[in-house]
Image 1 (cartoon, rainbow, N blue to C red):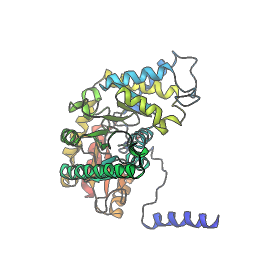
Image 2 (image 1 turned 180 degrees about the vertical axis):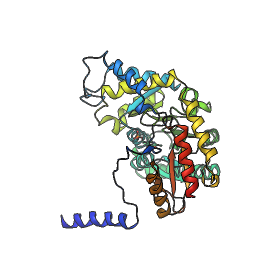
Image 3 (image 1 turned 90 degrees about the horizontal axis):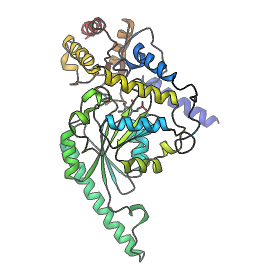
Image 4 (image 1 turned 135 degrees about the vertical axis):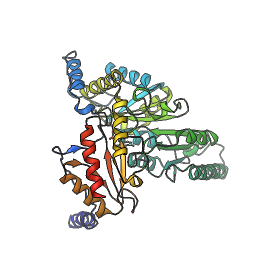
Length: 403
Ligand SMILES: Cc1ncc(COP(=O)(O)O)c(C=O)c1O
């Protein structure tokens, strides 16, 4: 026990000494420039009224789902919601997971097999990295949004899968058997590319069309995480993949409800056969209690609300207004999304800037290394439809004074 205690203290002390210790905090009194509630849905009085009046139609609803989807946790409402979500996003099917983390973990850990290769942008979310780790596939990363780097990795992946295949053949001959090795008996090894359409820590966009072209050229399946694009980009918020006209060229999309939609949960969009596969093999789906009825009802209400009003216009006006108001534009990473990044190199410098803005009444979070590369520490400013132009102007002028 002593050894464990001292290990825990040592790790925590390391964090303290490098100024990277994580703390839970509550900043309700500050003006929100940090949440993912880009469209203000989580706090929308109108949406809450829609949700509450919808709830009255189901007096017998259960508080909890009472089981995983494969056991007692499935019902017609969830399946119908999945159909609505699939139709909205122009996908053949949707499968709901309890969170975006679970969705990516389930997809990446179950689909690629040993011998396959997963190539990810170096900035993808931890849930993609963790899923890929669990898969036992080969893993490569390419430089952020760099198509040459991606192509190099695709070439290397082709080489790896070829050599795996020849080793498998040798192994099978060596065992006097023509049967494929268990690890590689799913026809040929496959290549997966995983990217985000809008990057959570940079707010910038992936060059999706070019990535699609490369994926097709190298026979790779493209997985796109649309967590930060859902609700914000595309027709009525269908996402960046739809905006770029790529819905039929992307193998699977992850959409999350916990950001612009203001609720909680996620879905994988793809073919019917992919949905069946995930129901059979995605452990984060199989072995977890399904989300509650209220959670699904809130998500359904959020989708209806998304369709009823033009939320994109309001958020785009705010993004434009903020970018115009900042003087140190060279510190801003190019972004058309509500995530605006102001580079303030150095952990101490970025943390001081965060503190300065807190004192001025703004909830803005610094992102420090090692979460981002040393030298690229930053303030991550999230803009929302519930931010007034006055608040945005005041934030920008405080930043302008500070820098
Ligand atoms: C790109 C991306 N994917 C997935 C997730 C995880 O989604 P959730 O918060 O629903 O678990 C996040 C959350 O921050 C994210 O930024």
